[in-house]
Image (cartoon, rainbow, N blue to C red; front, side, top):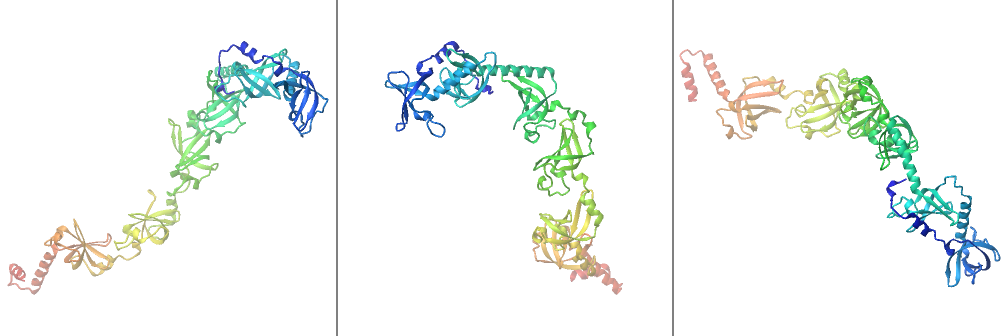
Length: 554
């Protein structure tokens, strides 16, 4: 029953019923007549019903299903007068059959029995509705209908109870209101009993919707909201149940006015979170079933009405997981490790990758620093390139690509390039691998150091100027830095690119690929050279002042 259809009014039922069943010979009486003439051309027949003029009837009413006539001239036939054309009555054989059937039903009616009918509303008038059931027509007064007059009710199927049979008037009255009231009382009784006893009962799933499932308990339908299906939290009902399933439920509340019974499945089962410590602990390994997959992770069923979340970052050690569905399928059973239990929020987090060896550990057992390996460039960034070697990626920093500092990842590589690199560091704690290409080649500084040493005077060409100094090129791929404080007596603002500068090597660091040159120390070096030259001549007659004076003149 749809109670939203119900409309109740205070009406004088006696007057309405009387008006609805006023008997007129033209609409209710069965009259026995005789077919006196059949005119196929006009598709009609004349029937003698004892009146001044014969009555007329359409031959369509007298045909069998195959189109042949069921009667012949001279046959007797029962009809009902439906109107007149001048003085000639118009009769109906079809209505007569219905009236005869109704009369037969009325004659056989047993008032000690209860009759429940299910029929269709075929007509509506001010007084009520005509209900057709198995070829019989019954009347349902508006006040016994519980139907909203504003709605289009013709064609609507309803259930009702026969409440009155008048053999004298040949009428049958049915009531939908009586049936609804009975069902409402039944719902009240069952719902109140369920709430009073607070017992767990078995029900049958009748219908599944997006917001919950309807369960039949003892002939009454109650709603289990999707938030009351499982202790896991709100779930999609269709993923857990189908129509016809048997479920245990317990009553929550009942709205008598709306006849809404609220049920709970989860309250009919123990809450696992009350004893979570006895069920599972952090560090435990459990078998789980994939129940749902999202872009950010997957939900897994641990049994015991417990659900856990497997974040996308916990699926694999591979940091490039694009979507969990690339690794998991709904329904799959997997082994997971419990990594977090939040009792207050009732949340569980698990990890799949924790049960698999770390790729860095596996890599470290088969590789060592200094190994030269082949890999594939997986991405290129502003600071370098990531290179995949087997199941793990390493970083080839821009500084480790070439001794030529103008070369970087973006102008040297493309994704998919296969390159050869040297492992220069393996950090198992941070799962990081550092790679180098230039370490596979001799440093230009190494070759330079074979021919030069600290204290040598060199000449270089200015390549770049910075706030802290200038860089000069000393040869092929060898640069040196002259700090601002080492430029004196030169002025950094007057120095231009391409300009040649002479200085003394003050730092030659092969390990860090660094050379520093000083102009300021060049004068000191020249002074030392001059003193050394004088001393080598062992000229005791000359003083140091004389030597310096002579040098200044030059």
